[in-house]
Image 1 (cartoon, rainbow, N blue to C red):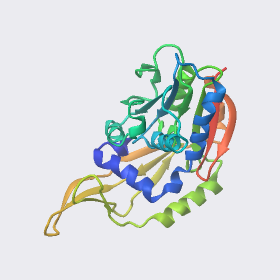
Image 2 (cartoon, rainbow, N blue to C red):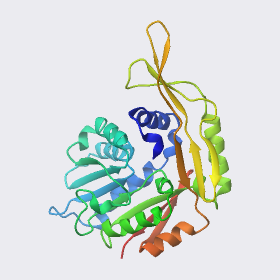
Image 3 (cartoon, rainbow, N blue to C red):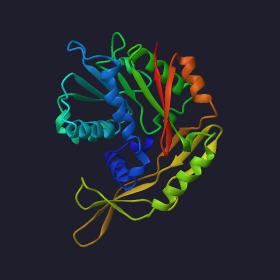
Image 4 (spheres, rainbow, N blue to C red):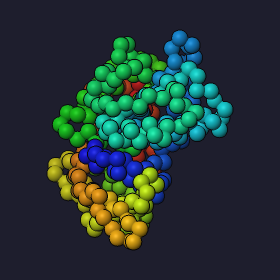
Length: 288
């Protein structure tokens, strides 16, 4: 994703989620999915449970699972976690804030959602018990044929029969969910403050968002978001110095009514169930 091309943008990702926690209201779904793994496939000491977080970002989903495991006194033994993201800066930050309780069980790696089989630990027979592509991130695969290629990769790495893939479609990117999208946009508008955002990692640095932040334009089934941001350092005398100032554009695919489920079926995925939140519908798939 173009917007996460620097370590500053990677930190802003986390700071932004902290300001709008409702934007990631999927934690309960993934925690339930994690709990179901052992009922779908009985534990086998010779074959650890494998959880794959595609588009892991800074590792939010794994941190939430780690918190749950601590609360429920669940041992991380017999579990392996692989987090994959195309952005080296996101992976670097994920490694910096990896939960200590899972540090020996998590591997974060730079890789593409379009070539999951090339990732270390995923070669060979399909072995993923739980695959997550959170935050409606499949819509970021906006190049022609990219989302379809990802779905075919899911079929190749997901354990047949017992494996589950959770792939949500956000209402903001679903042409058939305009009513829900309007409510989400209003909530974002209510949360928008335009105030500077202080960095927690870099001393005396803050992030400033000029007017026009998240400006959009649509071209066919692609929506392009402009994400201008300034990284500013404040000196001891109060003087400001702009360290970085860019306006990368992020392209997002819009889905027609029923289009995603048809593409998933054509790729070889079978729909098990669908789970709704305020922001999205998470579709749960298996491979026969």
